[in-house]
Image 1 (cartoon, rainbow, N blue to C red):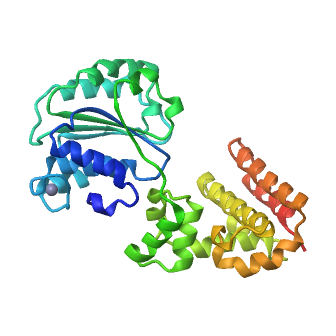
Image 2 (image 1 turned 90 degrees about the vertical axis):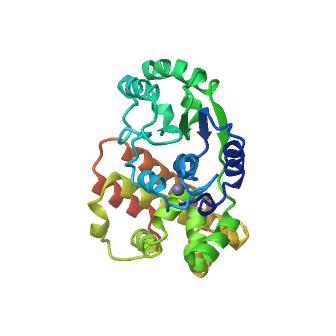
Image 3 (image 1 turned 60 degrees about the horizontal axis):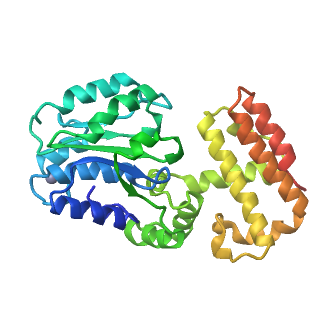
Amino acid sequence: MSFKDIKGQDRPIEILKNCIKSSKLTGAYLFLGEEGIGKYLVAKTLAKAVNCLSSQDDSYDTCSSCLKIERNQHPDIHFIEPEDSEAIKIEYIRDLKKDINLRPYEAKQKVFIINDAHRLTAEAANALLKTLEEPPAHSLIILISSKAALLFKTIISRCKIIRFYPLDRAALTDILKKDYSLDNNLAHFLAYFFEGRIGNILRFKDTDILRDKNRVIDEFTIFKKPGIESLSVQSKDTIRSYLNILASWFRDIYFIKSGMPHSQLINLDRKDELLRVMNRYSWLELDESLNSISDSLMALEQNINVKLLLSNLRIELWRE
Ligand SMILES: [Zn+2]
């Protein structure tokens, strides 16, 4: 992965590359912006670029240093990212502080990437402050967060902030078609459903997401025979994605009924059908459907019977 492969983040990349060129890339940076728009990819590529043996300000995954970083096997590049939604406890920061003061084994610059920095505990954040203020030479600390409101102000004020914005969806559709050879239906759905979040899009671009999302829509809104068996035993993440797909469908009906341009539809691949079914639903029924889906999304976070939740939802959503 080199910087030119990361789509839609030209501005932050340009700023960082200029810092590399003028040897000003030291200390602590905070990458802020929505989930899944490329912050982590840029951070990892930056760690490669400052240590690359064959390029001045980028990485092409060809030298031994870049390859080690790509495989997370470089002794001087550290990724701090506890699993699931676990907090980043003080132990992680103690290790970082011990390590950051030692000379690099082989890198030009040691890099510490703290992902989801809003998960730092108060104790861990306090322990980190002094290091952020006076980071040792030959070190670079990158904090990443999608939840600025949850970050400690003391942390924010000690970092140089780099902002990331989601890519425009129409532009992203074109990029997906041109650079990744996706067909129009898939490119459009990915760009609009994931709202420009390139991380998610790249994760799903080689899957059967179009077929799967259409199956979910059919199961809940079209098939006359009750039969959600194929959808029932799934992880919470999968059920959440089903509910988001259903929300996109009813949002589309709402949009098409209100005369919005068709290019704004998420399920553009089913435009003709949306035009056909829009009159089956009154405005009130559309509101109710969207509310049922959002109630189900909330209920999913509690300990509920998922099968029952889905079959109730199916009854609420289905129309003759
Ligand atoms: Zn390299």
